[in-house]
Length: 258
Image 1: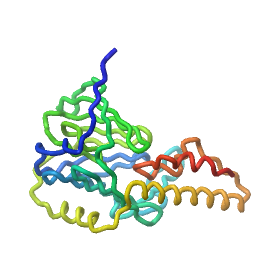
Image 2: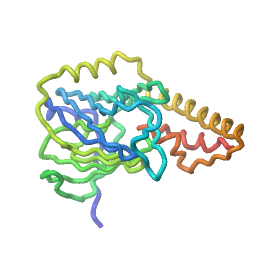
Image 3: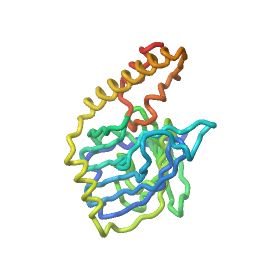
Image 4: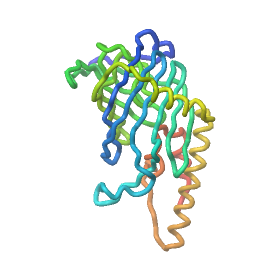
């Protein structure tokens, strides 16, 4: 049996190898919508931005399984600001925004022993779970960059491909170059650091409150129309727009019956 190596992410792992980089990634969401995203690295801090300017509603230009795709987004979209200690995350949700912070010492990477070449880079695979999501990443240790897309930080090398397996997200490296103009990095950093952000426990409480209220309201509205509605065991209708799923969210949603 192939031995699986365990890497514990320590906050001081994000350190000496960093420099200034602008790394472009192709971002494919759960509905197969493709957009650009950029990871800006400024020494020992980073900003990751998804450039999806669609507004909340139905994306009538695309369908999946012959149904319209529901979008929860705005022109700012999702932004992540990371340091060695924590990541501040901004997500659009139901015509509002949620800004919250989480520690960077929660990820425990497992090296699977698998290797392959992606875009001429010799890569190895690591898997891990984080806040209710399952990830697999392919990274190259030839480029010593410890920051990555989303808040996937601490690997000993550049992330070339990232897959979020529960919500079917894929992020693929397009290009990497030196960061010479820090204007956008500074602007995005300021946007997030100037915001009042929730601690992660408070984020969990807020999301559970929003989503349980949403489910109760859905049942009430459907009952008025004489329509029955069923939700799957994963409660995916309420978790699909989240990057981090609160620990007790699914169990609390399951308690709400029609």
